[in-house]
Structure formats: C-alpha cells, structure tokens
Image (tube, rainbow, N blue to C red; front, side, top):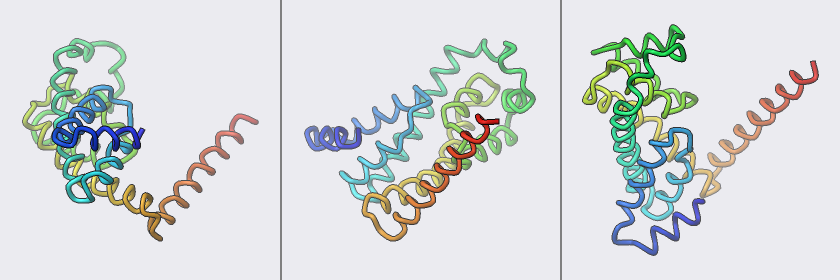
Length: 184
C-alpha cells in the first residue's frame, strides 16, 4: 500500500499534499484502518519534517471531519445500552476541562484506537473546539513517535533494528500467550 501511495504522490506532485490529507480523512472516518502506511509514504516523498507535519495536519483534519460526521449520524446511539459501561458513560458525560483531559490522555495512549475516542467524544457532550484542541495536542507526541519509529525502521538504523526486534518479541509473546490460553 505504501508503494502505491508513493507512486500516486509522485504522479500527482502538484496536489500530493491534498491527496495525503484526503486519504487521512478517509482513514479517520473509517476509524479502524491504521495510518502508519500513509505516514511512511509521507516520510518517503516529503522528507521527515514535512511528511510528519503533513501527517499531523491530515490526522487533525480527519479527526474533526469524523467528529462532525459521527455527531450528525450517531448522536442518538449514546442513549442505547451499548454505551452503558461506566468508563464510556464517563466520557460521554464529560464536558469542559474534564472532557479535554480525557480526550488528550486517550490520544496519548498508543493502544487506544483513535476512531473510538473520536466516536465516543462525538456522540457525547464535548464541544467541537474543545475536541479539536485536545485531539490535536494529544496526536502530536503520538505522531512524532510514530514518524520517528517508521523513519528509523525504513532506514534500517540501529534504532530501527531495536524497534523491529521489540515489536517481533512482543508479537511472539502475544501469540505464545494466545496459543497457551487456547490449549487450556
């Protein structure tokens, strides 16, 4: 996928920035597709800093568009039993500073899917300006870490080798744990 994006960006060089942002918006709306391949393509085509900035802008705009679409289409879902879990209810009811810090902290955690945070914030009581600020501030450190990791792995530096090794060990341990659990 990354190679196709690189080719697309080179083919339509004059609008490559806009294409990247549009793809990021689609990824954000879908909510479950990882953006790491787009970040990698941005880094290859635009360089580290421009590519990272472009990925940040795309993710920020994508989160705003997703928030607006989710709010318009799914607001009534907040009243259903699906959202009766205490942690989800807490985020749905949060307003003001509390909502800001909840979204900010959830954006900083790499294992919390971005689409879920956006969805729950959108159907809750959080305002768009507050969501935009919290989401963007939270995405910045996470995206810098992602861009740095992707860049190091792509260039196969010693840091990239460490990142790949840690990821492989984690994946092995996770798989091993699942296999052992299924046997018992």
